[in-house]
Length: 542
Ligand code: FAD
Image (cartoon, rainbow, N blue to C red):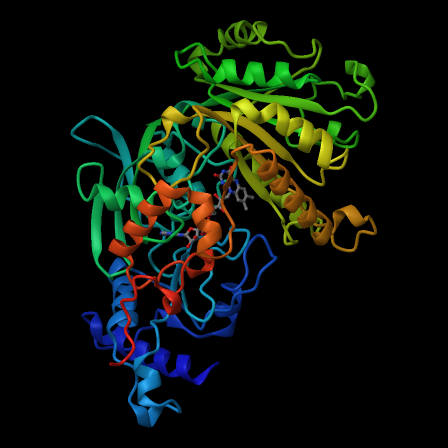
């Protein structure tokens, strides 16, 4: 450990215990290699950013104390340091990054050389209020920012048969982690992303202040933090919108060989917002013969016969598209569900004879990816590098994307699921920090590819898949598609400025200067660092 950082950290440890109300040493800050090494890696497994220490907070005030200590503490006295006083006085504050469940892809929740706040560790977790009603009649639950969505679901189901309205496909993600990005799944076309389903937040800002914010109170901070990539504050409490939980789900998949019909149907379905609509709309690309039955593995129902390309009129090397839909229902309406689904499907232009359906409990549908996780874990294929790429593509350019990427760059080798589904921009709040394409309808294209360790197929290597990602981004840039990365990964302010575009970048800078003027927070995103902070609140000695 470099001596300057070591000395600062020792000082920090002492100050955390004194800035707060207690004089006892802080048990929540740890240097244990088991903790720091665990915080150095993430789901992507392509980066390693070792922090000096990890905070396991049990309250917002411990987080605030850490930040105040990092900001305000004078450096350690010269006799404890091998540095000169002048060098110490000019040392920037340590960086501090909130980390949820560490399911980022490129070290975004890391704090190389700084302190990681482990929101899912510590005593903060499992702090959830009983669901309640607001004065306006909205049902909500208050949860700790490090709570996992699966636990929120189990809690709200148990306490009143309620559930959040908007989801991600996978529930072992933290509330703070998805709210710092957006949180999207097949419900987003109607309910908006998870960030559109939050009424209020408690946030510890980069100035160490604990602030409650909402649309009505401290609105600028509220908007900044939602989709804010952990740059403006640490979410310690979120008030999440709830609805009565459906009991059952009819889950349907239909196939297309024609991309235009596939996207036309998807866009028509997301325009429906009345009762006669599906509740979840996604889709995926099937570019490999081997995948044609694999994609049904978590879905299989004995009533659905196995399919081959030729049995549905496809030809070798063709790319197929699978539209995935659900309709929620209660036991009391199980008599009419078949009819409702049939009426909705009748309007669609899929390959006749390619309707696959299954029926399951709502919670089993929401938790479906966990089943796939357990299978992959058993085969040693979960903790492998994940060079995932997520992009928002404007609807007007999606055909070009299909030609250039699905039927171009990828060939017939996908190395993992490729999701594609549209969303309505009017369900997003433009005041949030998320960056979206300039169109009313845009698609999420998620290339969820994994490296297969030990494979002798060169197309399963990190190098190959990363190179394809680079080509996809270059294609999209050179064709002027106007796509934006979701869960973005960029290096340094210049790349980030391009990502945001001039007006959003100007707003981002203004918000950063207001809420984290020392650039202490979220250095794993590689936007700013305390040592090169343009707002420069740490000063060299004069
Ligand atoms: P982390 O990786 O720990 O953190 C992510 C970012 O949020 C970091 O910048 C971090 O500093 C910041 N952060 C974390 N906690 C807080 C907090 N309390 N306050 C402020 N900032 C904080 N995303 C979707 O939208 N839809 C999906 O369907 C979806 N499916 C996924 C499936 C899998 C298997 C995986 C691995 C990821 C998936 N994701 C999906 C992406 C996921 O939403 C993001 O990676 C998310 O950030 C993960 O949450 P986390 O708790 O692991 O966050």
